[in-house]
Image (cartoon, rainbow, N blue to C red):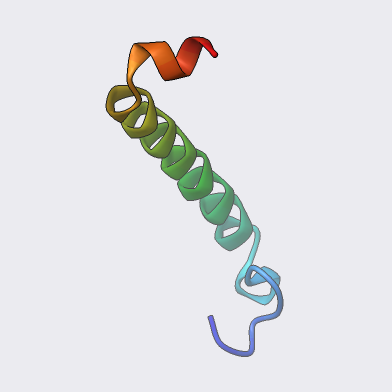
Length: 45
């Protein structure tokens, strides 16, 4: 993606869309992991 602009718009519309989808998947995984690793007492505070 080097030289294709920010988020790769010169590669077509699929590059920025896939970047967004991968980012959303990362957020879900990170949130789920954080929820599982955080004690219940700390989450309620």
